Length: 267
Image (spheres, rainbow, N blue to C red):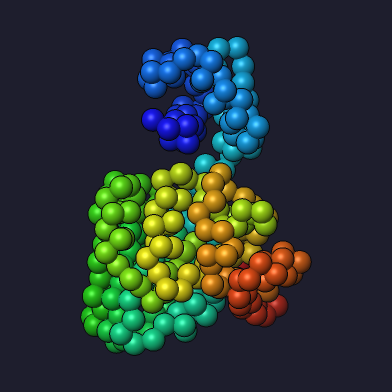
């Protein structure tokens, strides 16, 4: 196992169990204590773990990122804002195109607002997006297979990533857990990030959609640097200075206007 794979596995164990022991990792990974301690040193430098006697614990700030409500509840957070972002994003789509959606509350709103009877081909790993898009009887829908993540009702894993290699989509619509001006668009889940990267590789135009709150967060791992994204769609509640920085990095930014009465309706 190469270094990056080993450290990725240690991260996953930290996220799952909140702590790891050097002795357990030595037995699991069949490497020396010195190697494991170097790995933990690196994870500590990255701000993921804090070393203690005999192992390490997950940093509290990182742990808090994983308290994410289920997708059916998330779609009601900033629901009016997401609805308008979804409508703006859906206007990019033309009849007969092939579209890839990842799992997320804002991408669900894009699917909800697709143009009627446009003979679209929809590819997604999100069960709720597939269900919503199925309301259009002219759409051909392909649900990617893999392991079910119940929190997002999405399918992830090597099978999903392998299937995506067979597609060439006109548009890929992605949600994001947060934005890092250094690393780009980020996810708080390692498996989710890998799936999103595979989707980026399968699309001609990459569009990230997110409500304003995501500009003040950064997920655990990046999935799309700015030079791989074509467009970012958000609302005018977003921090204008951050949007300017994103534009400087070559991403077209579309800002959806919200009226004053809309602000009162945001959840």
